[in-house]
Length: 152
Image (cartoon, rainbow, N blue to C red; front, side, top):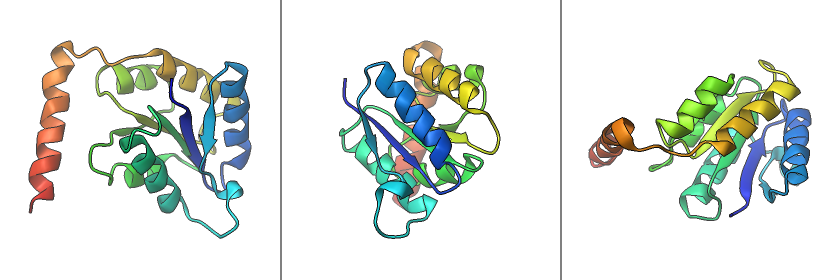
């Protein structure tokens, strides 16, 4: 399995560190794109786009983004064509993000959920795979609109 990409802003360093430790404990390799891993100041859209581009390029199968709410990171990552990032604050959403929407990236809010719930959400998402089935035409339609709207 390819390493998991992770990125956070300054509002989420502590949660990110807990998630990295959790993943490493499970034997999962992690590449950290976070603000605390850089020498220059960085804002969350830069981190989210860098993670999303690395996932799109095939350096990582999946990515995890963490900021204060998870909203900005998700919006930013979704600007990268071909990426489906889902904000998840519960296990059901995490499971469906992967199984129904084939989301390669999840975003979490460090000011919204606690560390233990974040680890459970990450675990649920990692254990879920895209089912295809009835969801496949919907994911295909998302890709269709993404390509169509890029051309304008």
